[in-house]
Length: 347
Image (cartoon, rainbow, N blue to C red; front, side):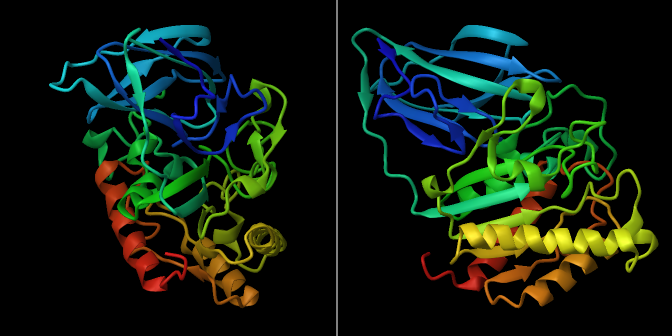
């Protein structure tokens, strides 16, 4: 029995391109589709659009986690191993492990001809949105032998958004998540690492669904589709490339320009979400403290009781490489405690 993507018993979370209801496009990490069904066979149909690295589909089937290597480009059907259960009722979640190093077009599922789709539980009322870079995307998170160390050589196989601090926070607080995170991205265009040598900043990507020019035409996001009560902005890690002007001179012209752009970016988010709490932060990844000082100054200037800064206990000095699973968990726990302390009314 074929189950098309627009079936009402499928449950989606994430900023998805729904321009074709029968071919939704997954771009951002943590984007997911889930279902409950009765049966003992399962196939998933999709297309992959590769920009770089190897690409993997994240799967959780009846609590078992695994990843499936995708073809570089083109359509594919994947047989998913199902272990027979006593009542043959299965719970499956498929999700985007990586950022816009690729896009996935979801084309549907197939289960037994005599199988049955079950109703899904309601989505959580709590909604979180994250704007960030590779740390927020869970890049290289599974390289647990390299905790507190530089990254190993890799080609995408260690990246898993499930283990990003962002998704950990959402799960622990029982919230939906839109994880607008891209490896290498900085605040402004022409800085950071993403899409070198014509770098694209979060200022350009934040209001898009599709933003990687290698993968095709950019598409705009309709902000009315998802109104979070909490927004986390974790930008400021890659902005020191190609030159760490904030470290060299906190009051330089470039530093002042960055602070003004950061302020305008937060104001743009506020214009979309008038009542949301906004947390400004960086991460445990090593960086100069002047970036956090710059964020602190902007937060004070904004003078908004629902906009705050959070500094982690090991902020900017926790690791020279990407956060591994335990380090992301450390960040997530601190953030959860802080979020709870905010007393968000809608929660």
